[in-house]
Length: 207
Image 1: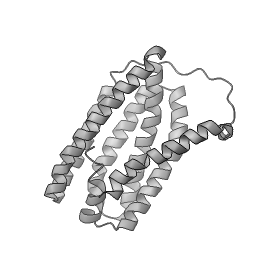
Image 2: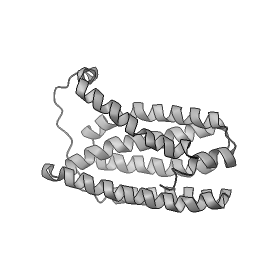
Image 3: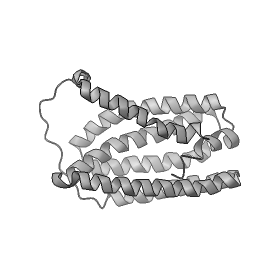
Image 4: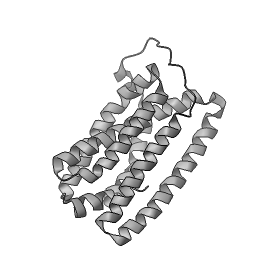
């Protein structure tokens, strides 16, 4: 929530990237995160998802702090790629951790609870970010970036309080492309992709 409204403004107005460089860099980073999320999710099934999530959240924290070091397009792509990789992979690992740490009968209730907390946190962050947009000075954006990095590191430490879960038993698996034969699943993914555009609108379109 602290980063969504300010990222585009910070990198274009205060770092000096063009709108085209911003869009191209975000696209490259997004594709990398999409590709990496699936194998990292499989890795978390075979290892400790708690520790893996902790490491990924530390990567997010460090890459967010790295926003302050961006001075060129190449550095922007590298830092943003690390950020997106950590963010997307952490999402995949987090889902598996929740599924295995929570009793099956409580999944819906717990996920709903976490969604409410997430929405409250994001909305609160956006309200704080409105202050930085009003000030529109580089130091205000830097304060929010450092704050987001520190909060993410604190959340990573919180993950260590989650009980450890056993690896998922390895069973005979179908080829990965088999999912492409499930038309209902593909239809659901397509609809969800349309809904997910609101992140791009808030992060790039509105600014």
